[in-house]
Length: 78
Image (tube, helix red, strand yellow):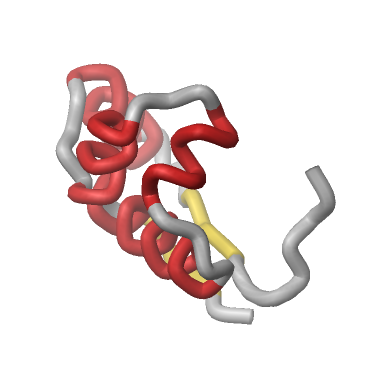
């Protein structure tokens, strides 16, 4: 299972896109599952930062908190 230390929103976006594609899901399929708009998924996967996400990552960095994403084939049941 790959691990990725998150430094910016685009790191999260890349993992979301990769895992979604590995699971054979289209953006619209995932958006429908989550009751999101496809436009939101496009923004999310492009790493388009919003104020909340930008400030959250800055606070975590300033406090020395590391965020690591672990992903692979052992998708938890939802």
